[in-house]
Length: 165
Image (cartoon, rainbow, N blue to C red):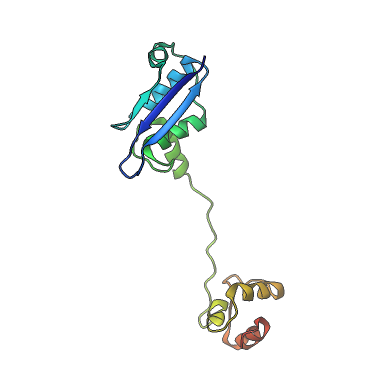
């Protein structure tokens, strides 16, 4: 026998109500899902099942919801995974800890020297696309740390190379 649960609710920013249907092979697993879904269930959200009484009467088991079911519960009740509206959900605490972890630090890009002209500025007045000009530059030079910018005395040479008149 399978156990089917139907959840329905509507959040103020949504145009349409949300529906969530889950199927479990045992009443005990369905109960684990039901207890998690009912915890801090927003007002106006409902959970229905033909076997709801049987699911509630099922024995408590030591079984955890998989990550997909836990994420779907959060998305259904509160929005996307990144939106945090309730602080005491265990999944929310895990997501917040993951979000607070330090990320990869980026290197600070070198500053373009004063007076240098960017390839975008050179291409702006001409019919040459800046992306095409950068492709030509990549074929002929290594990109400087400060990007595709050139000293005033190099501008004529770059214009000729790129095809800017």
